[in-house]
Image (tube, rainbow, N blue to C red; front, side, top):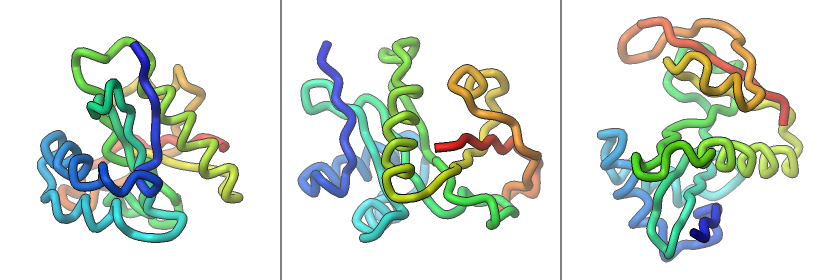
Length: 147
């Protein structure tokens, strides 16, 4: 199995497909993903894992993942691994690629929100605080990691 992780800004021919893929996983309009994926600059940035040109995992980096702490930025968002590929440390590999990318651009810390306790700690992430999700006002765990 040959899996490669790519940054979508370097592969414009995959951007539409990636937007559809992310939309199907997170039930957010495809056009919102496409606009974010096609944005220029450091952030947002989007990454996918490919096996034989098929998207099997992905994640993005955005300013704020819809929580009430805009000072804790940037945020990794929309991390998803297809069920058949779980347990192969793809999340860790994608996170590592994102961390390397951000570090190379002078960003020293990155954050993410999740309700998965224990998963991100295995990859060196540390719980920072509870934040409120913008849409629901519910508390969710925010983690941080040095890049």
